[in-house]
Length: 113
Image (cartoon, rainbow, N blue to C red; front, side, top):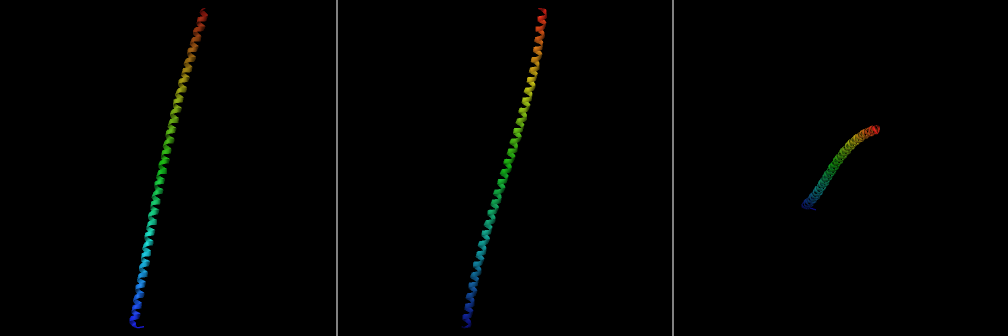
């Protein structure tokens, strides 16, 4: 083998090594892109979870508002019932007074007879 043949073989070997390195670089670039895609996917999942958390918070607030509304309605009904009870008690008292007055009138009339 001559020196020229050795140089040619070395040059071909170098070219093969360059091609191998280029292929490895492309493989690494593909892996980087894959990792970037996975990162984006994870970011999208995080955003989705955040949106679900916000939705749940809004539902909790809505439920709290409904509870407050129901409590206000309960208080309103209690007050209404208390007012009706007072009104009925006054009516009962007035009826008792009227009955007593009628009884007195009847008794007085009876005594005249």
